[in-house]
Image (cartoon, rainbow, N blue to C red; front, top):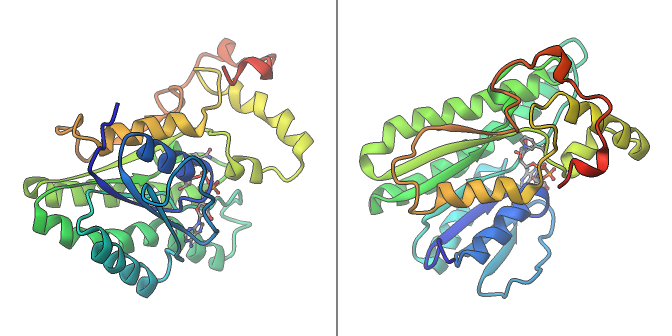
Length: 266
Ligand SMILES: NC(=O)c1ccc[n+]([C@@H]2O[C@H](COP(=O)([O-])OP(=O)(O)OC[C@H]3O[C@@H](n4cnc5c(N)ncnc54)[C@H](O)[C@@H]3O)[C@@H](O)[C@H]2O)c1
């Protein structure tokens, strides 16, 4: 299927993990993707026409504005914007420094604001466009281990919903996706010791009703749907992609600490 045929997409934070999976899925669906990151983006199956990569620090207002202007000059139009840039912070409120707070809100929230600020005027002119912001299921519920990260992801949902209400009558759709645990460098990075990671995964799985960790491609599939013309009535949502983890509390006998790690990736 080519559900994004003829569309131009910008993806901020496209070098690895969920962002890279979104880039690959967009290209597979026929889009031309302009992807940027602070890290170099490796081209895989994509041709130079399908994927145009750039180095952009999405926290820098001048770089973001200049980049969007440059893409518009080359592409002519921008149909889709994905704000995927994010960092994690597994620190309690007591342990986190004020600088940590500023940093996580800058990287996780300000980047989405800056990109929207640069792209939305163009989308309003065309009276069409789909924006997808990466929140988290931590943006839907409280969690003790990473409160500032969670607060930043709640803020992403607030930005998403407010913008959706502001621009829905002018042809724009602005949605958020809220993944649970996804097997990426970010998830692995929260646990420095690889052996400890393998031990912690069963605990993550055990606390998820679906008893599995998701793959980046599964998040990308939802982002493709929201970016495409198949979801015209979907606007201002925060879509949980978390195996029902944010849907409620499981009964205690459902916690599966004996879970077999090898079957969790099926
Ligand atoms: N992995 C998970 O379990 C999970 C769960 C919920 C939400 N998320 C969210 O999904 C998004 C992607 O997560 P991931 O797991 O793929 O993480 P990741 O760390 O693998 O990828 C994040 C990307 O953002 C880029 N980035 C960081 N700072 C940047 C900056 N200033 N400018 C441009 N790019 C920058 C990184 O270089 C990296 O390529 C994040 O917003 C994250 O918070 C991830």
